Amino acid sequence: MGYLLGASSRPAPMRTHYVDDPFQWATHGTPVQLDNLSVMAAGPDYATRADRKTAFDDFAAVVDAFNDLTDPAAVAAVMNRTAGTTDALNTTDNATGGGTAADVVLQVLTERGEEMKKGEIAQAVNRVSGHSLRTVGDALAKLITDGRVRQSGHGRYILTDPDTTEEDTAA
Image (cartoon, rainbow, N blue to C red):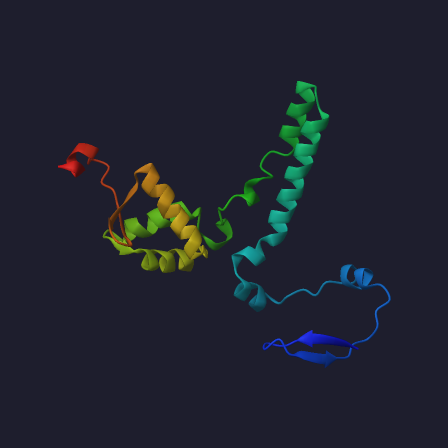
């Protein structure tokens, strides 16, 4: 017997089976595999989670190896053995045909050829690669800092003309 708090913070009694070792119950057993439709509905982050976890584990192993190694030849051997294992940690999502958020934002703005609202850009980027609105905002900020995109009004963005210099835009 136990109690749960409902939406209005009112306690509600509940009944459940007694579990001798909750940790063992929660960490052992066969995980249920989702069907393809559910995996697609969960999005690209869920679909590539195993690859990212493997890459992270490999990256942690490289860090541990570097901490243990003092011989430059041994360090080079570790680097050659694990070359390319951190690719899945990047925000590049090749499984969905996209790329980094900044690359996809540039692609969307190039295809449109005119100024776009941030929401329009985010929708188009999400359709292509599944990146979130926040990721698109961060990518736009980076592209503005790099001088590849400029803000043409409140919440409106357009590609910068590579032939235009700072003096031309100030005049």
